[in-house]
Image (tube, rainbow over all chains, first blue to last red):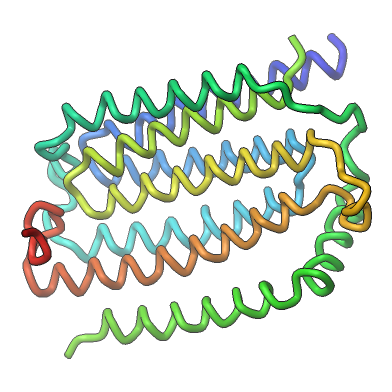
Length: 169
Length: 110
């Protein structure tokens, strides 16, 4: 098999795992299992980023989502009651309406994406890992300096806010 | 069959709609947050696919088609902040109401 068809094969395997994992997050009856399925989804998404040549974003995805956000979720599940019972992840009273809404919006998006004529570049993936990472750093410290600093401020505000809100009074 | 931009966009749309269903139909607040994280990730996949496949306009040649990756980085930062604050709010609500069901948190319902 050529490299091209290997890449296609890997894409389809990752895509199927990803959709199954996402359905598991939504449909599994125990919330701890749903959180673990979410970890699986995040890892598969970092695989999609690798396929797209975005290695730095893939590493960031693993560190932040798999490492940090999942731990936050597991803490929240642990600290709230009844987290381990067999019906800890139930649907609410409007799920019959939510299903068609999600199907219609998903179908509409897929229809639009498959009809659209995108002007696709034939250029190969830009550079190697170190090239892309270097360019990203230059972009963040150059044209995107103000948004970068604002993101830092936002993270500080969120940290202080989370401590104040979650504190025992 | 070669994988093109459309494949990635369809994958992104599928994850997005699964996350949308979870956000609309689940009762546990933590699951709703997890579904919203799924939707964030679907949008990130679409952004990075666009940044990989669309041609770079001459005016943006200095950015080497990496704008989409920078946007994805900012989305990840905002999602991390959002998750921290939202889980703190969940803990505060749980302490007050002894429940994580959205249907029990109806103070603002008319």
